[in-house]
Length: 372
Ligand SMILES: [Zn+2]
Image (cartoon, rainbow, N blue to C red):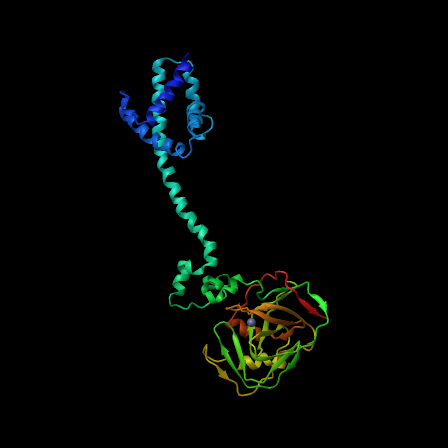
């Protein structure tokens, strides 16, 4: 008899609290007034969104087995109620009210947390969107508002951020034919030899702030597959940007060429540690004392001195410039045979630029040819 009596009373109490009729309780009106104030919003929030939930609410009041927080407190109360008097039942009701009051103390945490988490989620979701729409990013907006921020090889403006620094750099992030790559699984074929038409030429050396660059006067060129490309400049990377079967070299030299139509072709020479290299020494000897200032060398330079003896063997693939704006449709020719540079020559460059190599980019199924 008691169980059938006690549970309807509890249910009625819960309903009364939910309806805001707490003041009808005469004894302990303060506690009762607190209880409905807590339980009402909690119940209404969980129930009102869907009409199918009110039955669940009543079931929970009776079962008390589905919500972990209520189980431990109410299950023992249920067993006590099965053999107690009306006075004990009053205590049980007081206990229920205390539980509700306790839940009220915990409720603000529940109430505050969802808006906080909701406030954070959109920001987290926006991040990848900003990758595609860089101008929406606050940092990007700041960068675009008049300030030209230099790209770098590390830090906040390092390779991972190049594509977001300027709209013109987006290919660095979105391009599918980027360089450098790890050269492997090339098709072994007989390639037409690169026709090098290099000769002693007047040159200038400049420390660009990211590498040491040699600028040549006009007159040097290569011809590949019937297309002539004029040699424009040569610069260096440490370590080598390109890898061959996963291996990087201490340095590499890039000889940048341009066709009359503006297409780029780069001849890459891998520089391994060994004997000193006379052309490299000539460049180091003409290093300007200040960055961004060109120094005109007194003696001419023959660019062919940087080429390996075996010039017929090279890897070739289509890629990009390895610095912003990461322009694609660049013809790459990586000489298979490395050229040696001395440890002292490497150390000189290392003191200026210990790391100026872009990480390897996905090959994405591009065709690589390997000359036999
Ligand atoms: Zn380069």
